[in-house]
Length: 223
Image (cartoon, rainbow, N blue to C red):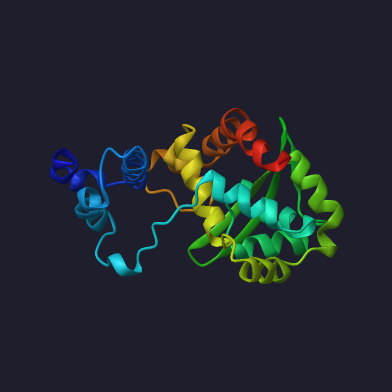
């Protein structure tokens, strides 16, 4: 813990290192190697300037699986859309509304949908979905409602949609996807000149979704 405290400024330099340290602390606590009292000083520092407003919660795989198990079939499909793509709520609504007219490519086990949904500093260039999820959405999208999903989540006290995005990002990092590519999936602006190379990032995003993510995400789709 002393080592982490001494290097807290370096840890906070990137989202990637913050997530790694957060996962490490969570693991140590689950294994009873540390207590909440031990890690509290580090958690406060990782919450930046206003701990009370910083939502650092990321659901576990088991919590996600429990939510999927309790949802009705139609709402489960919408939830999976958010879970395996990492898109924002409004971008998911846009996808359901426009899915018939959006250009898409079927690649190695997944579909890449051209969104080009740009809103101020929040952008969504592409939406990546496993092929099975895309095919079901394209068939059933007119019968699906994000409002219906949210109502069921609230009624049954399940994991809200917004945490699908956090879960997806964290899972990318855990599975070895570079931070810049995880950001690319979620439409965040790149901070470095190198990662601004649009075509190379797109090619890498395709590669990592196929090689790193598909197999893991399919575990949740098949349950």
